Image 1 (tube, rainbow, N blue to C red):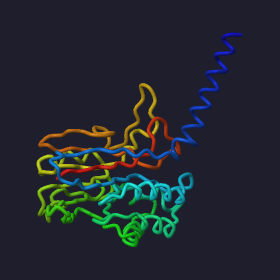
Image 2: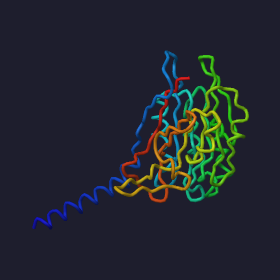
Image 3: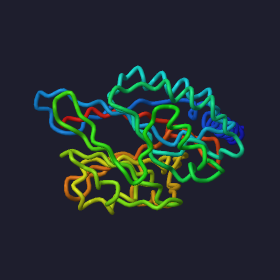
Image 4: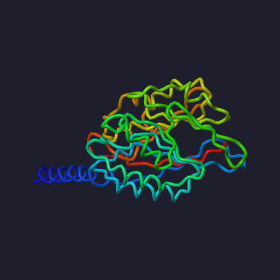
Length: 269
């Protein structure tokens, strides 16, 4: 009887984990707040990073409303999107609904984005720039922009083309830099190694989903998210990398012990 009792408990636990992983955790959103740089009494620049939304039938455009509300409640100065808007645009791509939601994201110093590999695949390549442009995002494709800050300083935001399906170039992305502090956006985190001698202070990436489903003794890693996988990495030449675990899902519509995240950075420059 005891063996049967423990078997049923184990079975119920497995069923509970599966239900949680497929129906609860993917709809959660965790806001993580970080401080970057030295606080010497100056006002920080509040930068929000969102990544890997992967709009699909199991994560519909309506879910964007929750994301928009949470982001706007933080009152960011700058919003950065590090790619993968749709999971497979050809199968599920309500462009107008997505555009309207993204346009409601508010940031007085601008909204910037880069390509992800899914933004090239699934017939998304021809609509991704249009959607971002209509939603007031500036798409950085091996390019950058100098952003004037209220404290009189400036910040350079650079973005790489996707490193899997595009043609990324760090040198081109940094060519117009006229600021002392640089944030580099790269969808794939392992590309960070190519920027370590370029005086880049902060690199923001996604792509990994943090493995999406985190089980004991098992870590699922994506191509070009094998070396750098989740969270902060202190790299050479005072470069910091942050790998965002993303908001949506791909391959299977489940998350376990890797809840969707919005990353908020108070950056002291």
